[in-house]
Image 1: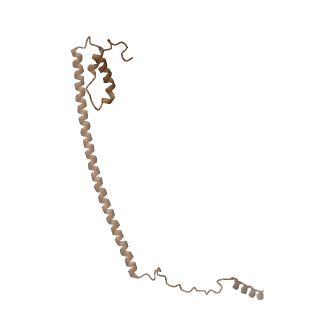
Image 2: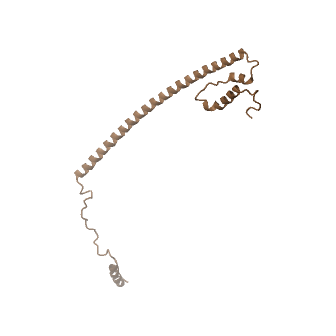
Length: 164
């Protein structure tokens, strides 16, 4: 079998494309990007750029934090002003409503004391309703006011089937 193995290895040498290659690969030509060729000055340039970039980013962070704190303070002040103004407005509205309610109650009591006996029912109702114009409530009570004014000018006793 020994004799027959020699021709087989010769045939394998022909088929082996790396058969002629030496055991150690020759050193490749140095690349300009290889770490060995980068000089100390190249590293210092990159390190300098990175240092400057870190400083710029830190300055941006500080400026952003300052702007944010200023905006937060301004927002807090505006919110406090809004809340204080709202509170005073609500308090004033409550006082006005209380005064108006007292006035309305006193006028109704005065009308009842004056004696509405014998008056038309619509006249009694009119003493309980404020028919002065109020722009805030104008849309909501305009229809009722117009009906009451129509009744006042032309009482239902004169017009049969009023509103029907």
